[in-house]
Picture 1 (cartoon, one colour):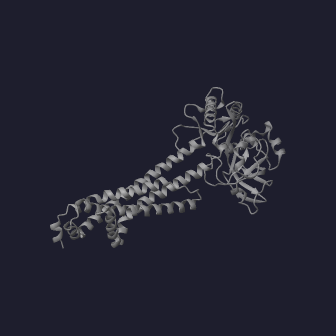
Picture 2: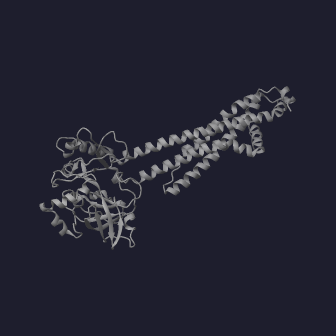
Picture 3: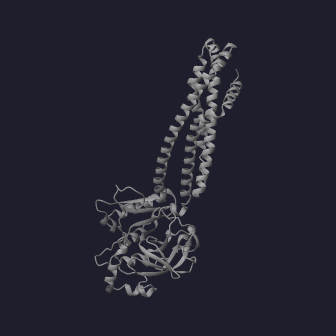
Length: 456
């Protein structure tokens, strides 16, 4: 019997029992669809996150000090240990292009045109390079020493009248103080600008560390009283200790002062170190130089580390690797569930093929009586099980691709199809078909023709 004839007869048998064949392949369809859908979503998520890393951001290393046994993402268990003197020293290092502090600040509300929007964690103090040019929809970066801010669309659009570049925004700080900033830029997205913020959209107001954090931590609220530079001048004197004490609520977020009277340097919760380029060698040199200084006796950070804290410096790619590890773990979990589904599907195929052998016992006897060899009977039933496996793999692949597309579209991710898994799905379908149909086909080939012809 020719192979094409075996395939034709196998397909005719499958078409003759459409419902049974469909239910038989359902386990394979579900298993393969689950694998392909999740792998597609995982690849799309990684592409979406990695695609947000610009060449400028690739040269950044993000640092914080925490107990090395602390589990979690960036800033988990972080303690403020980095002083402005440390940052100045890093900026003087030839291997480092720039270094600046990062500090989330507590607020009560944002006020624009008399409209109040309660916000507790929208304010972020950082250096101007933190706002990369390619992340701006309009405007420019803020400048150190100026009362300026860059906002994201989530802040710009939350008032009755949208904030625009040039508008004045009032920030109500913890403790009741207020400061007014000029909006000089609006980012194109409300997603975090670094791993410190995460990747979920959230209202953010970005301001320079000087004066919005360094002066606060030293006991001077910028714009105290809600007005311009006069407020700063009035609050910079030594007679403002009582007001400085009121500001300790801000520094509880992580900032401390070098001296007990609040006149020392502010300590940053985290730092960002920029290499000269995105070249891996330049990034490694910048990280090594930064760590060497921060862990030396020359730095203020080393005095505060003690025995419990350790400085971590990681690039965006390294931080994203943690997310990829979680995705890989979840992917392996889904693959394990899918493997169980495939096992159930293979058992279903084996069961149906055994039923088919029993139903067609007399047909087998007739084929053997007219000269069919054992290998031809074996090939006929094996072809039928392989066809069931391939059909299940194709349907599962199509279902998985559609589910992956809908998932990526719903989450608004760039669609990335893992085509290697499509080929793997077909191969798995063939292997499952062979494994499940091997015994029933062997049993059919071993059927005695005399007993088969007598079978009713």
